[in-house]
Length: 229
Image (cartoon, rainbow, N blue to C red; front, side, top):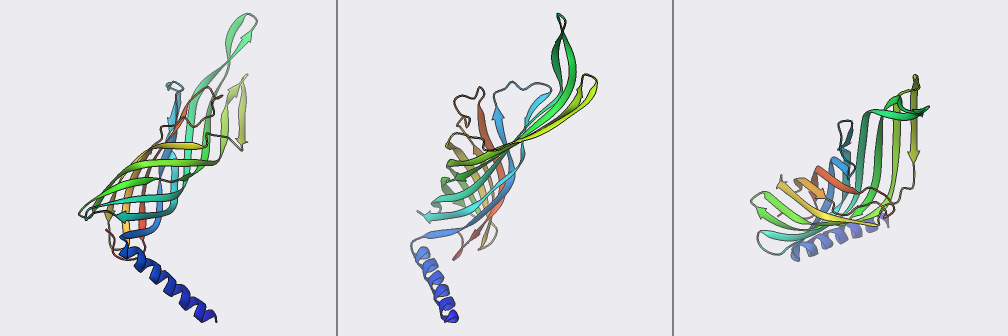
C-alpha cells in the first residue's frame, strides 16, 4: 500500500509539471542573502549613522512565458529586514547649578529585526542567458523586535546597558519597486541579484521620524520541471 501511494505521488508530480510546461508555466524555489537597512530622516551627523546589515529572503516563484523572450512572474517570500543605527561618542548633558555640563560620553547601537511576507510581481526580459526584471513588491508586515546596547562613561564611572523590545508594530503594508538581473547557469539554476526600494514610511503615525526599508540581495533560483527560459 505504501509503495502504491509513493507511485501515485510521483505520477501526480510528473503530471503537474507536464501540465505547467504545456501552459508555458515554470516554478521553483528562491533563496537570497544580502544586506538591508532601515533609513531614518534623523539628520546624519559625524557620530550618528544608519548602516546596512545582514538580511535575506526565502520562498517560491512562478513564471508564465508570454513571448519568446519575455515572461511575467510572481513570488511568495519570507523577507527578513534588518536595520542598524550607531552613535559614537555621544555627549550626555546635565545641569549643575545654573550651568549646562557634560556628565558623560557613550556609544550606542540599535538593531531592528522585522519580518514580512513579500509578494513581488515582475516582468522579465531574456537576453541570451541573462534576464532583466522589473516590478513591484508589496510586503505584509508580520512582526518585529529590536535590541539596544550602550556603553561609555557617566559621572566618571563605567556605564553599560542593554535591552530588548518585543512586539514592535509597523504599518501593515510596505511597497516599492524591485529590480533585478539573473543569469541562467544551467537547466536547473539561475543566479540572481535584486534590489528593493521601499517607498512607505513603515512607522505608525504617532512616531516622530520616518523609517523606510532597503534591501540588496544575491541568491539563486532552483527551477522545477523542464529547461529554464
